[in-house]
Every structure is written in structure tokens, then in C-alpha cells.
Length: 217
Ligand code: GRF
Image (cartoon, rainbow, N blue to C red; front, side, top):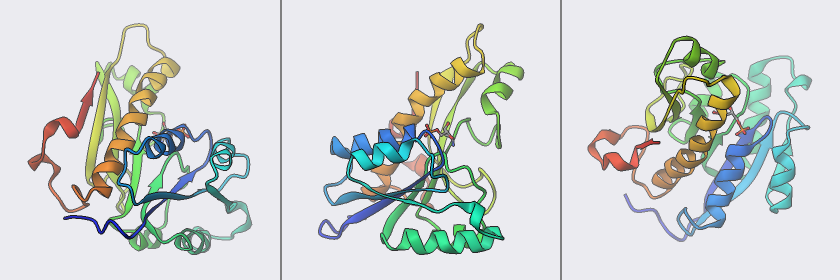
């Protein structure tokens, strides 16, 4: 499927903290890794203190903060968040360390255009503390996964995975840093494939070139 090159493909990125994945994606955009009609339209956070917001501002990207603390329910928060995101008419919404569980209504609204990165080789190690659990389980290989988001947590169609070794003297921080470097590569690659029209939430990625879907170090 060829994209219409004249219509801007807006990306909205949601963060809660450091924002290093968002930074890597912005840099990939600046280095023209994405189709020419791509724009990172906004970076939105639920946390006014998210360090990543400063980076986005410095790079002239619109930023917005919507604190969840002012809302009585997840549904109300998510509806307000949808209104803010939709001002930017996103082709793709990217969850990059957005530390909130999303309501089914939110996921449904962005069905097939919502991506997440998870720090494990899914479907292993869903949930939190993945690096600690990888070490405790004695895994020799660990990694990260970019996937489309569906209603079930960490369970949507896998787009790309990146693998790293777990080494004998690793602690949680060392292993997290090794995985994070790969996260920064595979998230941009997944976004590139999506914006090029090479993948969608229904396609079977395994039918395509395996080099594009697994990065191993
Ligand atoms: C990453 O490890 C990502 O996999 C997880 O949250 C962390 C976010 O880091 N979902 P950053 O904010 O992108 O630096």
C-alpha cells in the first residue's frame, strides 16, 4: 500500500518521564528515516515534570500536559486525552514510556494506529520489572518488543523485536541499559515500516524480510 505523499502523516508521542525513546524517534525523524510527509506533531505527558518535555520544546515540537490527578476516573481522563491527541490528527500514536493503563475505549479509538514498546521479548515477561525477572529466571537472552496495542496488556501483534545477551555479572541497571540501546533502534524502525505502509496491525510480518523484524546483538 503506497501512502499519499501529499498528506502529512502526523505522529503523536505520549511519555511520562525520561523520554529517551521519544528522543531517539525525534532524531530518526530529523535524520529523515521516515517518509518525507511525516511530522512529529506533539509530545504529550500525564506528568508535568517529565524530563522529555524539555527536549521536545527545544526541538520546536508542540507539548501538552494532562495530569491524571485532576480526573475522577480512567475513562474521563482518557476521553480528555483523546480530545487533545485528536487536535493533531495522528496517523500514529506512539506510547514511549507512558506509564498508564489505557481504557478499552482509548485503545479502540486508536485501533491499528497505536504502538507500544515493552522491555522484554514478548510474550515472555509481560508487566513490570522485566529486567530483574529476566536475571532471576536465568535467561540467557532478553530484549524488547514493539507491538500494536490491543485491549489485552502487552499482547497486541508484534512488529519488531531486539535481542541482547544476559551476561553473568549483569544487574538490573546494566541489563536495562543494554536493552534500552536496542529499544532506540527498533522503535524508529517499526515506525518507519508503518509509515511506509509496509506493515499494519493485520499483516503477517513473518511473510516479509526477517532482517527487518529482528535485531540481534
Ligand atoms: C522503556 O524501557 C520502555 O521500554 C518502557 O518504559 C521505558 C521508557 O523509557 N515502556 P524512556 O522514557 O523512553 O527513556
